[in-house]
Length: 231
Image (tube, rainbow, N blue to C red; front, top):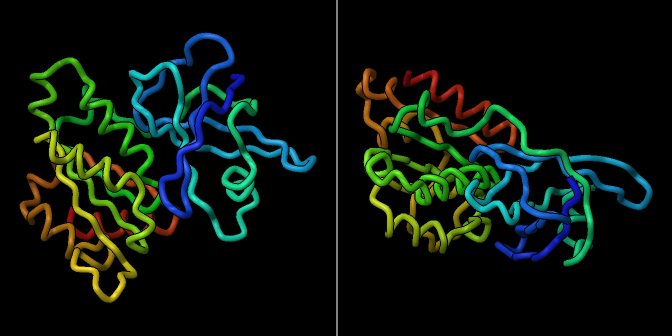
């Protein structure tokens, strides 16, 4: 695909959402949770990175890619510091098997998101909200457990709070692992104790839920270990 940067949105001091439009016409459809590989030429170096699409699948006019700065990150620094509206990029079409499939995943969903792993969760939430099958939406439940290192790192904070207030199916638990002195919310990590506290300890009910995990590799591995403890 040939993509054009149409907008750069600052989410936090370390995160931006880059909005890409198609050069011609509508973009290919995708499932909420899928990603594209973005191809880049940075000072003569050809490379590519996978980024989850954070916009709603019903929005065919653009893809939102949410980029978080990585320490010493070659690509993230370039995208956050140097990219401007009007630039052209090449990408693959949407791909990946990590997506919400209501036919197989059921209606009781739990999403464990760490840092920029919130991007596919946002797409899933927007997809459920925009779903025209109101009866199905009413039956669905999604509990988002969103872990961030610092309060200032929380991406989409105001939007997610508004969406939770407006939609009964959505529950959000915010978790900060390195809080400031005056922070009054939940702190710590997504461990088995927290999951049991939030979701209960009824094994049959837990096994009926569909769990998604999105975040850096250490977060994913830790959450998978903790889920194995309770399931």
